[in-house]
Length: 74
Image 1 (cartoon, rainbow, N blue to C red):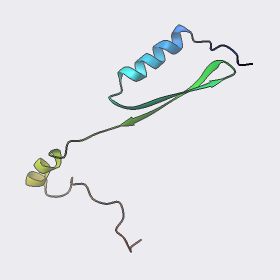
Image 2: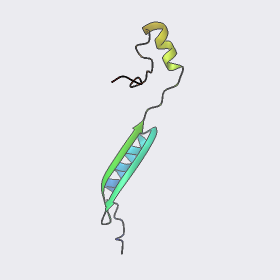
Image 3: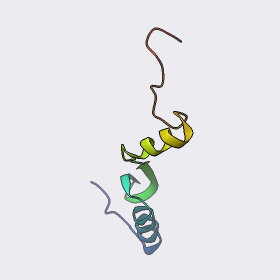
């Protein structure tokens, strides 16, 4: 039988703090034997497509998005 989850105010404050700081992403809570033992946060950063246009006119293509690897080369 599963043990009931024990959540104290310390964990609630930690979880709320992590969620308040996040704009895009996910929060994974790991529970072991009815107790929270770990919290994993994956955060995403999203950028507008027009943001690189300003960099092109002043800084060239240094900040433009490019593929990680070209096909056929290593």
